[in-house]
Image 1 (spheres, helix red, strand yellow):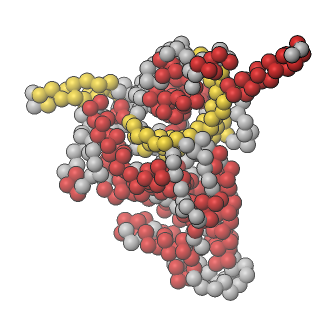
Image 2 (cartoon, rainbow, N blue to C red):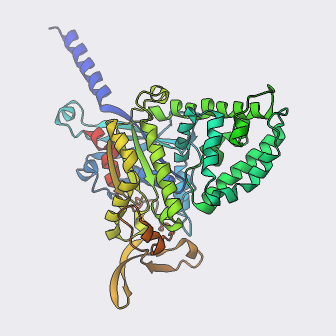
Image 3 (cartoon, rainbow, N blue to C red):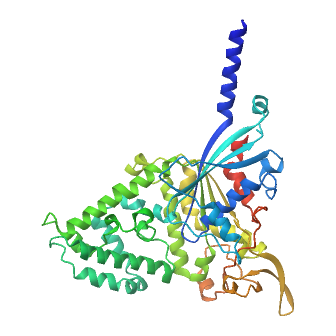
Length: 471
């Protein structure tokens, strides 16, 4: 064999090794509003950028064995998406007093390039180092709640919303927009101004359901988190009485025709497009769940959160042979359920928090596992805001947590408290009657730009979501 041929073989082998060692992964981070998506991504990026030198990741095998060489930011691939504001999040955490990063309200993205020593003996012989390009995408879980709309026409959606108004508290909040809608002649020539006013009243009703009742299962999801669609006519529709919605459109450009047209446009160009452009491209997914706030808000809020989370999980397997299944076939192979804000309860409550989350997602998780997706459930704190301690109650030492409450930002007074016992099962009626749990939000800790952010089990999350990619 001549020298030229040997050189060609070596070049091809080197090219193959380089191709094999340069990997890519697209990680999606979602959860309902307030679950801590922005804090999670800020901390994850911070750990990866500083983790090689500021080792706080003992549960991540690659870092523990000194195989993680570092990370750097790279230009994001999708120029039409908002960039995740990592620097803004750090600035908030490093301000005086520190504050939580501002939440995002749409899709955002950040890309990192991770360099590491391959764990596989075979690949180590081919290359001493390898790269993983990691795209982290943040999007609201509320947007996934719209998927069932694709199986409804306008009349069916009106019936669905009307059924939900059997809840007297919702019916009370709905009075304003329903009174306005009652004055709409559905068969009259379309009045876009009147329709827009009623749609604004309906949108306010949805916001009131979230803020006053602690509800999470909100449809359409883009009405409360519109992102780039804020003010667009596609969000100017609303449900009417089912008997009116069932009438045949008599005038081509009537109010009823306009509402029906916008509902169908929303399904086709907003709901379906999100799944086609983003959802089916994800490789790994973490769903953050705040179990603590709904425990504060009561039985109905907790049940509504559970309904919303399981509806989100149905996005992974929506009907084995349905049209939706043929349209959306996500390639996600790992899914992590994470109970966020674990630092806001005492450490011995973490096991109970995981057990509670496992029951919350049990229905959806069964369907997801049937699809062959590897799943895990854990409790974590993306940015640890409290310290464990003890307090005396009636002369007896009890476990407690201490930190600065959000309400004490002005005085910066440290508080020691026991928030209560987290139920390890879905709460029964007795729990709500004798509610002894009170979740109190804490201020984030003072942070240094040179030290990785304190956390609880973020390294365990990294190991599950990324660990196999470094072998």
